[in-house]
Image 1 (cartoon, rainbow, N blue to C red):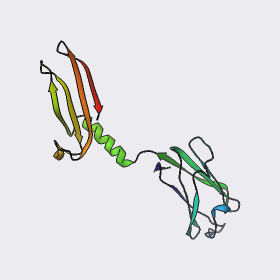
Image 2: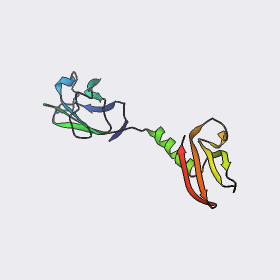
Image 3: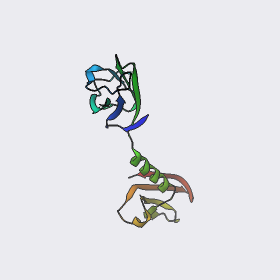
Image 4: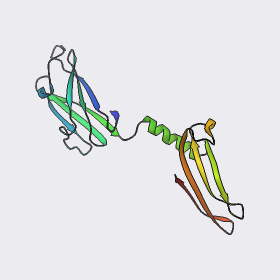
Length: 171
């Protein structure tokens, strides 16, 4: 199963051969029975705008655009060459490896790696009651506005010198 970022096309390559493994050329999408299912197992063939490209020597490429996230599957049949069908599945997601990498960096920052605390405010008992925190992609950018992953605001309240509430929110 392939992972596809939502908004991108799914590509399914397949080969059509005769009984002697000779590639069959000259076919078009109308020669096939095609059904494309979304995550709810609903036929979305027309909505996903499928098209077929002949690559040569009996090799073909089916391309379609999923209209929602989730597991999408294709069943492609030809009455002579593969009457029982060929199929494929794709996991359509709304993130990519860059997004995951940035999320991991934010987790590392929140676990106190490459972070910078500034604009600190203290009460009369020297308890920090507010500050701003920046998470950076690298430690060479500390204190600057370069390579910032995320900024946060921290607020705290104290009762009789003891921490009562503590909040941290994205800016």
